[in-house]
Image 1 (cartoon, rainbow, N blue to C red):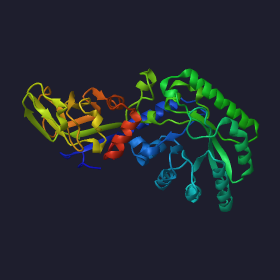
Image 2: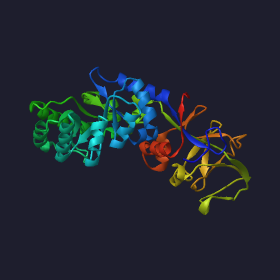
Image 3: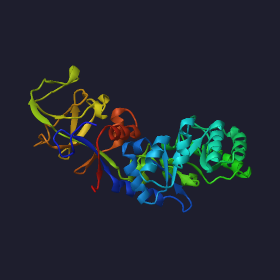
Image 4: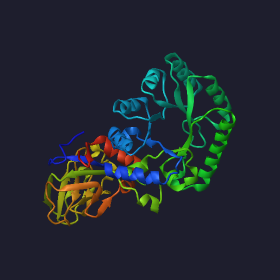
Length: 381
């Protein structure tokens, strides 16, 4: 991760506001029923926010269940002292079976042989492993089909080394506000749960609701919900509705100007001269580029904040450098802090706005910026 510390001249960094994270988790918890548990999704380095620091802050807020993608992430959490349930969404392969036992992880299962192998090693070691059965109710991704439930329940009842800690599914349309489709999928999930509960297969709980469903569909919370993007203060799908307005963005992305220079009208800027000045201009150079996640597709589209004012990005973004126009920002000079994403003096560039410029979604933006740059945590300890 390139760049000096945040106080240096040639620097860029992301700031992670842990107080904002704590606010968001409390806000989400307030929207849950007394019997509904939260499984905080911290996979992919907590969407670029730093998995260990985020998990510790969430644990301090009383969260006792965490979702990761891979076994290695679960190991990191355990070795960092994180307690409670750790659910591994991508399941487990044979080489990781011992780690699941040793670190007390709960893998998601969607293949019979996974269930058999887990049970075998659990019996050998004298423990019982909690698993979460993934059911595909319409996502078209991982999971067994509803018609395969009876066969899987028979396997789960037969294999004594494991217990059904949860049954899960996932909404493909909750972030789009497709209420009818979500209701149909939730009804199918309800049918699945009815089959499981009438089969005398013990199950601890059920979960299907992601961030968007938590906020939009309180009747679909079941026993557990799985917030991800909302924990980090980003919009969970389309629409600007009151519930999301109360979330606080956790990540900001910042840099500093390293040079300001005056150029005449008609000056071509950066590779290919995709921008040519139409007036005498003051250009500022930033030590940031596509190597740092500030992608080339942002060229001549993005804006940044300097001294509380918006400055347009000019010319093609380079690997390590980009240019902005500060002609209309009096006093802008080398060393000034620049906000590429986040708030500065009353204005804010959101992850959603950056995502629009990139032609993508806020998930990708925070993962890019957070995982490719130095992170500074606030408040400082």
